[in-house]
Length: 203
Ligand SMILES: [Zn+2]
Image (cartoon, rainbow, N blue to C red):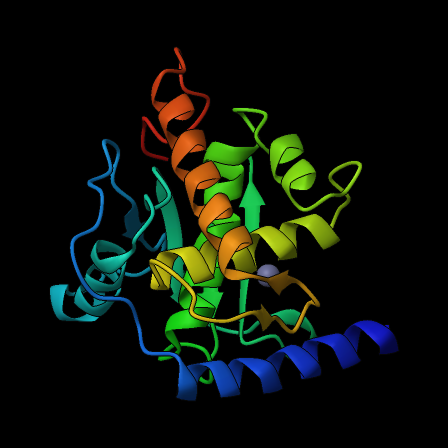
């Protein structure tokens, strides 16, 4: 409990730094064949409420998660600024008051969603672990490493230096580029799946 709490707090501190130092990515993004659909089971979102998050997805330098996300503001366990829960066939993402305006937090949670919609069913989790030099995918360590990696790829086409995330992932510019290509390759593999396990139908 305590080590995890310390890790979350450490991540929060790092994310504060990242939010200040790293600007959000800009430019054209690949178009998703199955775009992310943000909805909320009990709340009818107004277009102006959704717009900033769809705009953020459109700026991603890697494909967005192809499917439904029950997305809203709310609480997360362990003082995390954002969280993702996978429930059978779609993701639930909550951003806290601290996390809702932070592009890295949003992109990190979308990384968790992308993992469930794309990486896991295409068996690219093993390739990601191999890319990091790890023997196998280990929960929850690997999920967090991937979500951090996805967030950097979503927000930055390239890195000019090495970054160490709050979860301890050391991302060199080379590893960043390799990871972003792996994410794109996984998405291409997902597009070829027939039938697609999730994402092609609503809740
Ligand atoms: Zn996470």
